[in-house]
Image (tube, rainbow, N blue to C red; front, side, top):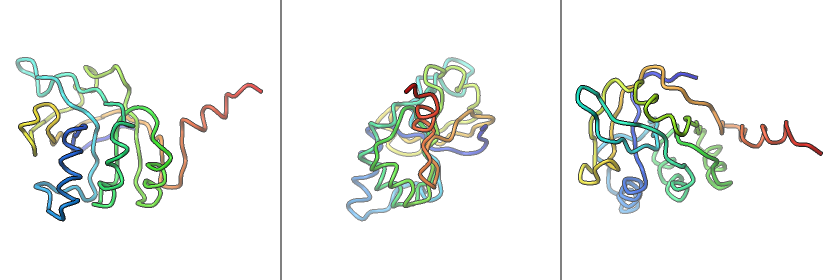
Amino acid sequence: MLLNGVLLTARDASHKRITETLARGERLSFNIKGQTIYYMGPTPAKHGRVIGSAGPTTSCRMDSYTGALLDAGLKCIIGKGKRSSDTRRQLIKHKAVYLAAVGGAGALIAQTIKKARPLAYQELGTEAVFEIEVENFPAVVINDIYGGDLYQEGRAKFKIE
């Protein structure tokens, strides 16, 4: 699929801050309800570019934070690699989806990003939360709202017995 529109980006350090804020019962400085978070920390932009390399981060590193973000209304996550069974259950519970972007294609993915601006936790540098606007951002549905798991389905389909 090709995504168009506004996404948020966040990595480990910003996920920690977000969940700590939510655990204290405080409001975030940005709206997470109904949003998509792309697990990405951009490299610095070269002259004349919107953003530097923008490849996905390994998703399982965010599994311990995912439930709290889904509880707060997050609906879609983009990263790379498989998710824990608990995270997959949380996705079903919240009717949210997990998409994969192609690892190693950060320069190509950066070309789909038309605008980027820091949104929160700027002191974290590339791990800050950014708002990005994308055109034709390539991603594949891995975990759907019904419990489907493309990684498991692919392995089962090609399993040699």
